[in-house]
Image (cartoon, rainbow, N blue to C red; front, side, top):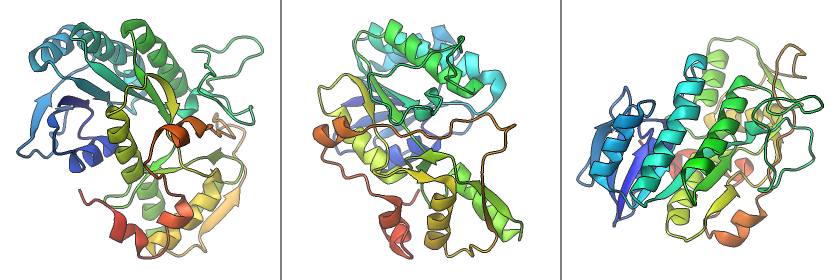
Length: 295
């Protein structure tokens, strides 16, 4: 199968490249940092914000599948890369009749519901009486979902949560490690509830999903909901870091972020064989290092 992965030098993209099925020939799309390549991987510099370049690249590859993981953390790129870029990828994928897996997120929602189903749709701009999405990043991802639906006839939209791993550590875990190693107190919020997912399990679930005929929205999240503080305790246990500098506390009023993002994953449980392990299982001392795919 011919596969294009956008954002292949990103955290999830690198794990996908490390776990390639034997029948995948992959083009690894990147913007600034070329990913590692191999016998079945071709690096491809790609600016998804450029519609003509995206269309030309996809037309030249003629993939059977596109997995769109590319993101940007820079606010100035939200509209250009997250929103418009996702639309360009979806349009180019549709033009060659390829299957599309678009990575989305739980921060589409405002966190006021007890649980969110795949049928729940966020509002791309807050309206009177509606708070979601709360952040500019969340609003951009909401608009990206809308753009993808409008540009591809049958996309797979995967909403996920906190993606974590150890070799190398993900962005949030790196921040936690750096603070503790400097001997600084690290405040982790007790009222922000998410469903963290181990990056190895997410990558394997995406590979399995790629082989199915499913289309629509699916939630690929971890099996349990945890506060950021409780999750931080588990990460410290896995990494052998002291916990005495962790400080539990509520989210400050000036921080605009959802409080509880509990995404239902019953559909994924029915559809996929890949087991998504809980942080309690992954983060036992010594277990994380033994199970991780090294990048």
